[in-house]
Length: 185
Image (cartoon, rainbow, N blue to C red):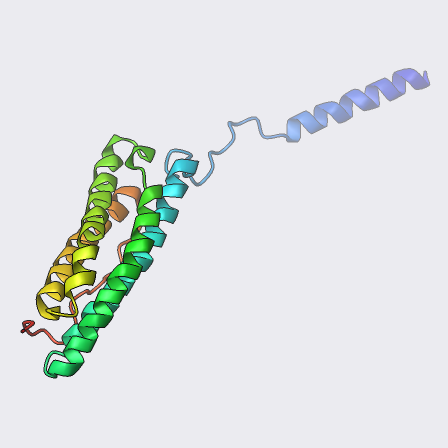
């Protein structure tokens, strides 16, 4: 008798629990799995680390160009700034070359691969001009600074396109020196 009463109580309890449960379909999460970007692959992380290293060298070039532009009215200080730019070109070349070695555009799929390759080409352009910069900046700083600045602008345009392609926000970066005057010899 006790077994029958326990069996009836257990079945009523189970029926009550089933009646209290919501049998509708579960609600979807507030974020769709398709809306989140996939995590970066190891090759993509390596590309971005290489970009960070190369960007350190480019920051050195910007500093050197800025020094030349600020000293354009004083011949002696302009030559000193040119010599400094030449030294910074040598140091920057090391950073850019070591960072560029890690930047394989094949880390990205086709829609993003094109901006990644263009960014690599722009860094290669700066690397290729660095020996010329280091040898001639002390003698003739204004044209060298102008050429470096033009190549940096092309790099920053490629960087903005790459950041857009991978879904990162673009920061407003102004590479133009504070004085907007033409560089003179």
